[in-house]
Length: 104
Image (cartoon, rainbow, N blue to C red; front, side, top):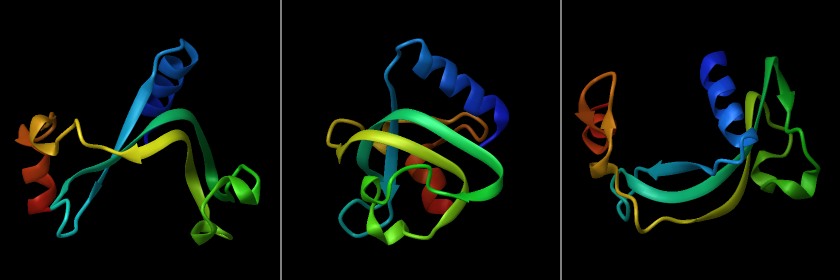
């Protein structure tokens, strides 16, 4: 995630705006559709990989010991039924999001 995008998202979060993130899964059930959404509370970045900046019981055990340069703190992770990948356009390509993901 670029510094500019991190800064823009952080400014929006700090202003009190609700910033939602969407997760797309490529499986038979969702077929590159939006499967989950969450509210983004914080973005933590580092030039070097760091462990998750939270307590071990605050993230899934599957990530125990993982290190990354970007961590997202989320709330209200839930299945998404109202938003659809067909409704979004990838600005840089001009393609429908679902088509863009399918084509790689």
